[in-house]
Image (cartoon, rainbow, N blue to C red; front, side, top):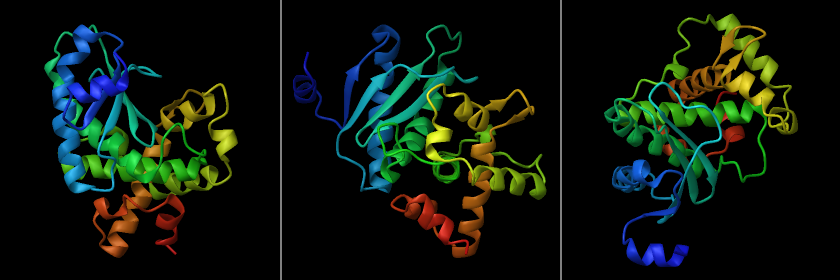
Length: 226
């Protein structure tokens, strides 16, 4: 079935472009639809129609759900097929759509112009705080309480020297080390932790709601700290 036919059969806002395991993934479509409708009420600049492709580019988390913003009107959603307790995945979908949808609103997606490590940190910090504040999620990657400010500033200074070409180099190793886990240092979630720390400082300084930053670029947000 071509995309236009799917859209005609689906009067909602979510257009499924492809399943990886339809029997498992199809029951999540209604949850995605409801979450996206709610999200658009908060961020009306989002496209009316959101394309969803099921699958993943990296390992599943503990809750068996992954996601990534892939284009100006599309996201990828991964549903781990062999979860014993699928209710955990259903609970995660709303916060996932809010996080990835925020990326779409800010223009931070895979089919974009490319972003430096520091820009990526700010965008991840924004989406993480938005997810946390608007869905009551508790993303572990946002918790930097075990790091002192000296460590956060060191990571921040190191990120400033990593260009878009270096951060998203073809092997994906640099991105994985900074975004997830670096086996050489034993450090984890550095992009997310620094981004959350920086954006929280912006919010504290300006008293802006995180939803209102959805149309701001990373550089504009960093400029608010000056």
